[in-house]
Length: 317
Image (cartoon, rainbow, N blue to C red; front, side):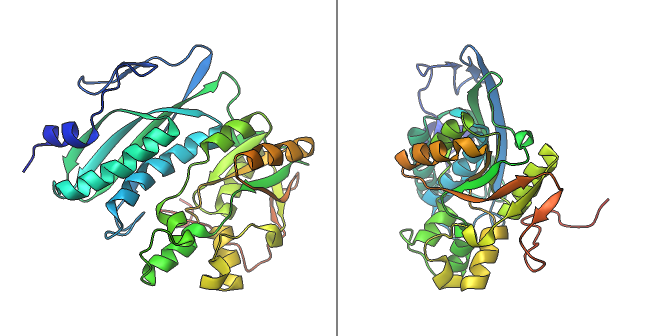
């Protein structure tokens, strides 16, 4: 059985000292990084756990992609350009075929996103993957949750409900990664390019990871505002109504989670430009409501108030 260090050298270590901003990569106790002048460093960490975030039998290539994608989504929400990442992998065994496929999915998304893996760790235990991502944003220009203003237009990139629909498809026995719902669930796309575009046009943003309603509440709370939604305007993922039915599809779009789209608050005068720029990226932007001064989420009715995903649901402490 290969040792921990042999696994790192074979599947994860890549020469990166020549990469811009990397002073020292894997091989020392720490990576040494040099952010660009005039930039702030955006840092986030995300942990993916088997049987919580992905099924045990999911393809390893998809698990590798997904572990990085969900972390990169946080950089997208801040309008940051992704630069570096670290991976801490806890593995039940040193399955070399599984690791080769996992690493292929992880490194492929690294290349497409312009991200360099600069370090990490491998340990033994129940399958768990923690990815720390670092990005750069021009000083003082990061998109925050706290900037929404009454009168702003609320809009989302892409489509919603694919995460919940894809989980349903998996549970029904679908295994074809070309299925649009399964792909949305296991191979989500971090909206990095969209985040950089929207950084210049939006007042506030958040990524939709826990469900639209839950994440909208986070944004409204941080901004001290409320929201009026138009549920009929929600863009539904391809095949979602056919799989779940109309009512359940709309509930999935509101509260399903795992969509990793961006929810933004835009001044009305920038909406058309935002739609145009994202359209040039091949990504739709759909207005779904307005920011209002009155606290709370309005327009969704009493039957659609699901809290969204929580790891530790419960009452107030």
